[in-house]
Length: 319
Ligand SMILES: [Zn+2]
Image (cartoon, rainbow, N blue to C red; front, side):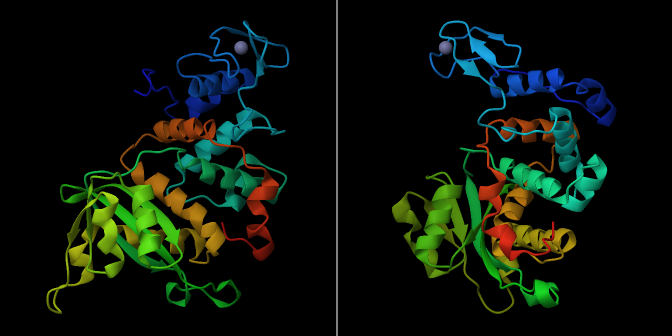
């Protein structure tokens, strides 16, 4: 249950095809995701609206015209929503991560660039705006990803990137995680990550690195576990973050051949986090629901802005 509204999603591909065969059905679904408690006029907070011929919601009180896709990932799209819904379904059903070439093939899209753009839009939507921070007992550590040791060959070689990892302790297991590329392992970088990822008052569990010594001044409880003797490996001290780090590296290798530029890496970290934090939602439908829910909450990202930095540098992007 979210916002008092029953989560409502297709359970398999057949249901998806049957239910979302028209633009009207898709728009109706997005409308409910965007305004779970019913339409609220952005201008006058009026609750009553009618639908115009151009599929705009017209506020009955002030005449304001709202579009269900304005301000979302689907703003200004020229492709039918039925196609977007199929793309969302396909993206959520890819366990190892999604490739633009495959998406292009599956949807029969004419252009590779369109498939690539859509994938990146979905990746952006995988990060919930204003999402909850981690809480309770949380392990934090940093790890390097990328670089030659990961099996990168020749022209795709990139430098290593430092990634901060936070993982909730859930009994002996792992709860939710957060990942973020950081510039360095300085106190400023690590504290900024902790503050963004973890609720103050939580217990932050780290190794002995001095970059973490200021956490108590930031309102966190801090537990330090240090290596005692050579027998104990770092992975035993903070087993959850090390498990997450090794899964992340394996996933990057398998899905992206380990060849990830630093700009793309941010998106891949979001994609990995989205999939990891929902690894127990076995239902594809539920992932689909979450992705679309976040897609209508996300700011639209014009293709131009999204690729300005990244695209130029990647002549043959690995998706
Ligand atoms: Zn109004």
